[in-house]
Length: 303
Image 1 (cartoon, rainbow, N blue to C red):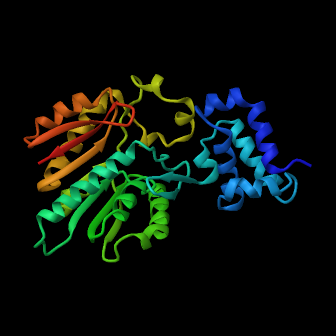
Image 2 (cartoon, rainbow, N blue to C red; image 1 turned 180 degrees about the horizontal axis):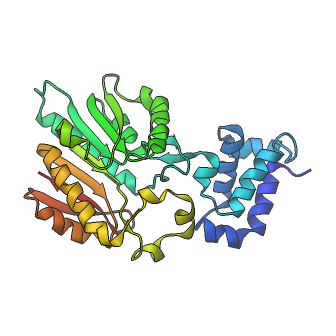
C-alpha cells in the first residue's frame, strides 16, 4: 500500500503540467509540506509522518479533498486554511485575500517609521496611534504589532464583516506575541467614512486597498485569483478609480497627525498617477518604492 508521501510524489509527477499552470513554481517538497500540515496540523522532520502513514489508513477522505481541490486550482492557503506571512501563520478563507510576501516590505517600513517616531518622542505621555484600512485577515497589522517592543493604540477596519471575523480569530491566536499594553480594536467601515463623526487622528496609517482596475487590468490577473479571492478586496471600477482614491487620500490627509506617515500598497501601472494625485493634497513628501521584483509597489506619504 502506498504511503502518503509516495502518493503525493506520484500525484505531482502525473499532474505536473496542470499544477504548474495553477501554481507557478510549485515544488513537490512544498506540496508535501502543505499536505502534512493540513492532515496533521504540524510539519515533521523530513516529512516523516507522510512516509509512515499508508494513504488509505484514516486519512483517505481528507487527503482526497486536498488533491481534488488542487485539481481545480484552489489556492493552497484556502485548502489548508492557513497562510504564512512575515513571521507567523494566519488563518485565511475565501473571505480574505491571501497575504503576499511583497506586503512584508510594508510591514518592515511601518515598523521602522514607528520606532523612529517613538525614539523622537521619548517624553511621549501617550501611545502612538495606528490605523489599518482594509485589514482582511489582519496579517499586516498583527505582524506590525508583533514587531514592536512598545505599546501602541491600533484600529483595524474592513468593509467586510466576514473578513473581520477572520482578523479577530487571528488576533486571538497572535495576541500573546504583542506588547501587553497594546490596544487593538476592529471596526466595519468603508475607508475612513467612520471618521467624519469620530475625528480621530493617527501617527501612521497603512493600507492594502483594492487597486486593480476591473477592465483595464483584468488580463494581468491570474484566473485563479479572480475565481477564488474576494472581488471587493481586489477590484475598483475603471471609471471610479481616481475618484475613489481622491476621497480616500483626502480622508487620510485629514486623519494624520503632523509628522505622520501613510503607507499604501498599489498597482505598478497606477501608482505614478496616484502619487501625482496625492501631491495635490499639500503634503511634505510622496515617494514610490519598489518590491522584491523591482516593480513599483508602495506609496509612502509624509505630512
